[in-house]
Length: 99
Length: 337
Image (cartoon, rainbow over the protein chains, first blue to last red):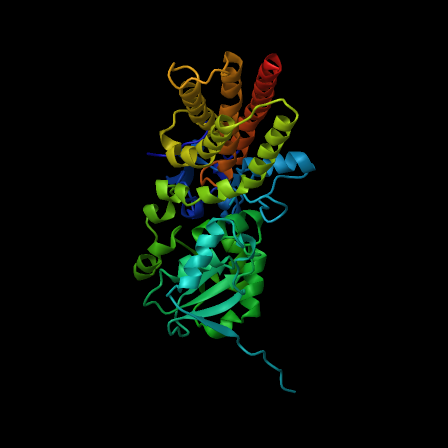
């Protein structure tokens, strides 16, 4: 059975005009959401995106945008409590619930 | 004048895990010495590698390093361990410690260009959120090839000329994957649970109880539902937000607790009133919901935007429900006084 998360939330954007079809994003995406069509990358299932940012970091043409972040409730709570950006920093404090 | 050259420092390792390696992994899963389960960063040789052997990049979390080398039986390879402060590849990549800069620095420190004649490094695919392959190539001349997600596919990946199938490139989250993550969830909540028991004990002393066996197992049950049952049954529980999945199973648990104690006629406890039963329904499901929501951090498919969206609704609902439940149970105690 497939694990699926919330629909229509990912901040992933692909600027087709800048894409040269190198296929790097297909290689790095852990959820297999890109395909190549007519030598351009296309997003086939945006709802599987977990905003890890691998595609953005490895696109040589800056054709992809996403607001990368940790999908971790504990990190977000700690961010709220301390007034900082949520980060996957389980080593700090008593936090050992994520990653 | 002669230019002094630094010595090459290579550490030997093997594909076999010792009893201590396995014990260390088990301990880390239970949160024992987990933040200090490290190996030294640097260049390791596995088997009898030569200047043509592949270079595999890993993190200095010992569980990452061990799960890589144990899959390399019979392979001659170099393992380049980055300093990720003892964090696994994927999490460290998200933080940027498994990153372009650290990879470039580490290759320079170990003088990789003197060890191998080829110019390719194999980086685990889950390291990609931290690494810009094109930037690494530009600054070091080394080409980054992304290997499979799972180390067990590495031998086949190397055999097929560094080609990964779609299957090898896709992250999974099987029942077993989820199960091994549950001990740390339980351990992480142990301290909070002790505090709650302490408060209940104090309330008993103040005469606001009695809180007893039923409260104890009702709460423990809600914790197990949130930390173990919901993660294991994850894809089969209807709905998508983790908090909702936890709430649903927690609600089933609250009903079971009430049936066991008050509403079945034969094991009924005399002091078990409707207020107390309602109190459980208001308290137990949100406890499970909160713990299930925290499992988003262990999962492999939740996004920041998604978790934020579910939390904006779930957190206020959880707080309101628990406060209402506590009021009901305290009112119930006062009536009996």
